[in-house]
Length: 471
Image 1 (cartoon, rainbow, N blue to C red):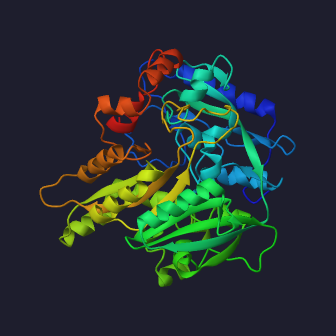
Image 2: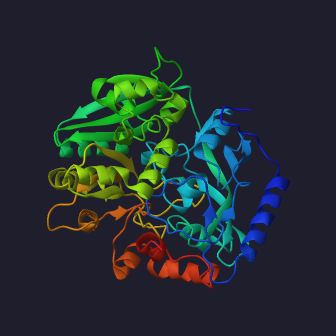
């Protein structure tokens, strides 16, 4: 038994859970909304209340098996990465990409998009999937692989956000780990210098003669940014602890070198939800001393966000103090590397949000889906080009609604500028696209064809309706 309570479950147990889910799905009246009854979510889109019970997926949240020889794991779709990582680390392995927050599920990272500091070499989580079992909108369970009769679903599933079906189990690739990660925090003064350095690391897999296995960065101001270069290590002179008193993102500024255990490295951002825990006072030393360590977790902050969305306490206090209403600006965007410095320059001039997270990525050179040709876009709902370098830019805050402006204006401007720089935006948060432009960006005819095949009666929401219309 590991610390997250991982206990492999037999295939018969999975089959029973699948049959229960099929029966629940069949019992939902035609025309009634279909949704999952999940206790956690990492989506920022508002969700309308519905009287229809959600599908109970509580029996689909375990690691079925880990195969150290093949370096694969058979995992149920609602398994959190915290549970998955504990199961694989016990075998000296990890998923090829581990998203930053513990309660992100494997199915969520695949049907949405996940990313982390190994993405500059390992791509995105869905690129490690060998096969995926899906409960489709038609109420059928199919297994999709890159080459079988459901290859169209395999390709369209990433970024479909549950509009084509729900992932019940997946077989995924794993990679070996070493006990420690050595970090170098390298300072840059200008976005152009930063972008040039990212290009060097992505080309060479090294910096200053030393290998780089993990790559991300933080932009604090227009003239202060850092790339964090992580390298596997068998030994460490010390290890830092950012699960209690100390705060990881501040160490990026304060230290030039650091060492973490592999597990602490993978969850370094979760303790303070990057830097967003400051909104709840959790970074105030007096409050942090009495804040239980077990509550320094992203899912706890999520509960606080949901309470605010329901009761609007902070918004009422701001109005009482005469402060302007605020617009939520929570987005991750992918910008081609050659346009990243230009985009950052615009953002830092025009949008009052700092810090900003950077995570370089490119599609996996080869994997279960084969080796994509240069320029090919093998995942139609999020068409990144094979062989091209991108940088994920993440910014998560609020901005004041200025006189004469309305809620959503800044998000709309960001969407426009991202498109002007050849980028795409993740769909886990607010989106404001008109329908025609949205369909051009996110799948178009390819999505419509797969939707017609696997959800012919429209039991599940359309992607535009779910991501933009927020029904």
